Length: 318
Image 1 (tube, rainbow, N blue to C red):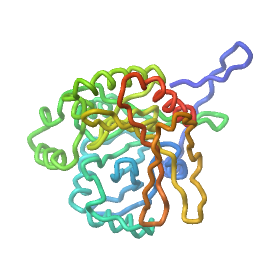
Image 2: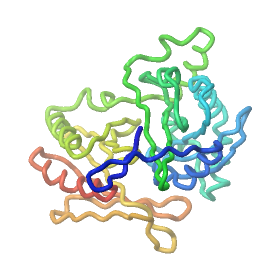
Image 3: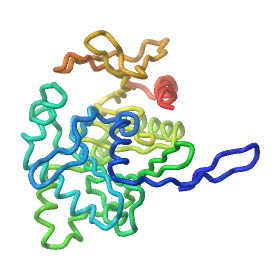
Image 4: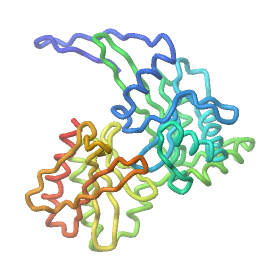
């Protein structure tokens, strides 16, 4: 990736800067975890089993843990390490719960966590061709992100995404199959089709129209969890889509309200003259209030107005 600075009508390439240590990458990401990945920081250097996890985070949107590892070089196997981390997690769930509760002063229970949505994020200045290809499967729960630093304090973060529909279990060596199969039995990879393959005649055209309009709105991607399909632009989710027999429910995150009444940064408020969106809230065990909008799409004729609401959220994230 090259970055340029415009000087009148001329593009001047920005010089690349290097991270001296893995810790430099870690410090930068941890200080900006919400901004970069929309994740909640839990702890650094978490020792569990035979591993020391660089960063442990929590994804509030899917109620799942996220392990983040930072790399300076590229002489390692992301598959071996990724499955080792996930295997450690599924075998030590109580330790992860305890660490979360102690570091966040919240009370999280085992059943509060969607363990099937657990994932590992690797962050490095670059990945080699072997590492890129090793995660190009439909069912690996690893993400590769390249981070690069340039002059003028600019930082670029880019995800290397899978384009394959093949399962890693089909080509894994016999010695690795037991670990991979065990992890994959608990940590699932969901697809859009898991939610949309049997939509009713009422909902299916609404979904096709909504999907087309979302892709016109932004150069984003769809990703699926156990309960919904989300539309994501870069590392932020614009909306969350849940399917019902006769309608589609679209969720827009507003933000949190602290116990002292203070609202979280970039708290979102809709301009909704038709009063279609329903305000939802819930109380975390810490006392904070989580808030979002739920927008019902019941008729395809309402799609223009629904997109008017979604566009406001997209613009607020940019």
